[in-house]
Image 1 (cartoon, helix red, strand yellow):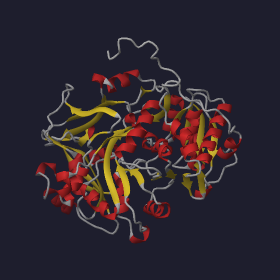
Image 2 (cartoon, rainbow, N blue to C red):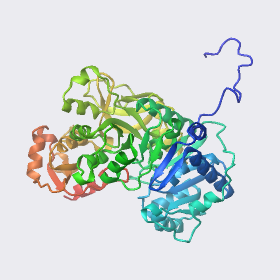
Image 3 (cartoon, rainbow, N blue to C red):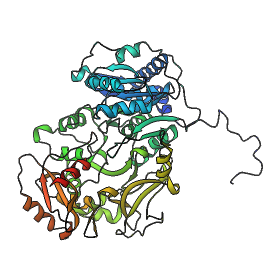
Image 4 (cartoon, rainbow, N blue to C red):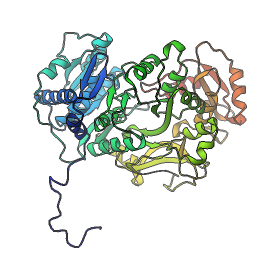
Length: 542
């Protein structure tokens, strides 16, 4: 199909076919942008020539430790230079990078190290106790532990392990990178959150990551030499693949260990940050920052936000501060973001601020590297695009995982019908734009009526005293279940439960308004997502 009648001699050769890999970006940048700044963290500042050399030494040193092609190298490191270097150095020796969430418990870290079969573990000194406890709990062979101290943050080496810089010093700067022969070769191993059981190991291939970097440049309208602030954890979908992308553009990665309003505003003012990604909680940090935490800047900062639909009220406020927000959506299984709320202009430009914010809260349309993303019913049929009917978001394209490691049953279930099933419930507008209604497990069914927790949360976030809101189902004898709101107030603000409920009823139908309001700090993951499973447990006991 599609072949010419005579293609004699038209074969794939080394000259006309090279496996796609993000490793190519840094190899090129070492020549094209050799003297341009690649990575900044405190006093650490390296050029692309130096960045490439450090990644090469890492690849060489790991190979000397016995890491062979296909072996896993794990990390327990925040957004620091060593974590960025591992994204190139590990695959450059043929290894598979497994960045582990630094906020996980000992048992889960031990499980991931065992399940993934890590041969080496790079550990930030702050998380050395977590790492050693996890290694002690492992049943199989433990990985070699390399310590990565962070003197900038006051975390000195313990003296009990080889340090990262000593490991680099042992590496050969002339080491020949092991490039993939097949772009389907495994590049990275990421684990899902595992809130309902053991986390699943999501395997990425070189092709998917390469095309993710290309698609992101198009969708983010990027030009040469951007300055990118690492707010999205590099252990979360490999930081949405942005670290692999930056060398393609000669961009500068500004590492950020602790996500605070001061750190973000300082990076923008001091380093001229032009881009960053983050969950809506990051937008709230910026909107609610005290005056003394802010710094002035005179350029527009492009922001990708994802993780949960941001409240329109938050979007309204932040864009007056110099930030241009684009809502994106994706999952660990899709290398990060795969849909974007692409602004169409025209009549959209004439909307008032509230109308613009409402559109920007949509998850939108597929990124260019994806083949198809849509919403279907339980029979895999396209739902009516009427902004009312609901279905599941499904997707297919090159930036979908290879599958779940050592779990063919879960892989087959996820890929049923030729699409990846997200588990997210959404509506589709007449223009095809997708808007999440809820996770399937977060829909509240009260007296036979479906209630979107996202809709209720969006209304509550419009109250001037509310910093964050999460809504879950509370068991109810009469209605089966009813909405229960958990609200985190802004500093210095007070409001009663009755006032919150009355406020919600000004916008929502009575059955959608929360029947209980609990004021507390909301439990969050390391990426800023609210942990609703904890709140469901509290709601059941009320």
